[in-house]
Image (cartoon, rainbow, N blue to C red; front, side, top):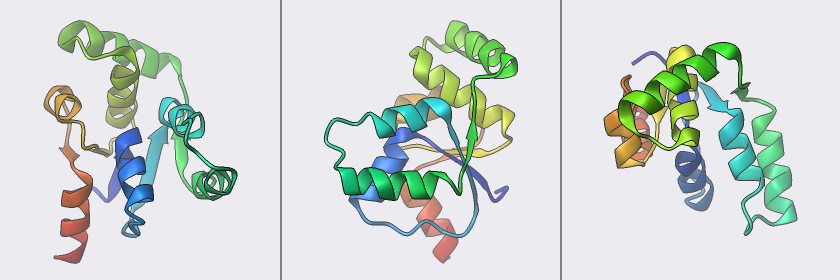
Length: 125
């Protein structure tokens, strides 16, 4: 694996809810994921502060022209929802392994992907 991992929203939620310490790799995420996390209705003020602190150390991929064009291609080819297409495109363009527990997204991503559990197993093995 590349050591560059791209975290999807559900991987973040699993990690936060499970109080999982992520291995020391280089992490990326999408601006879509950032927005989904910070607008999560159940997010408390203290959780939001922690999340914002964590996000300052993560490279957030914005909605660039390249991401937009790739997301359009992915959506047309796979029928993924637009946010998932943007996440998939962002992961591909960041040359990262997509970390997601979303089976449909993993199957249609078109690039390397692992579940959060697989990422944790890789780092301990």
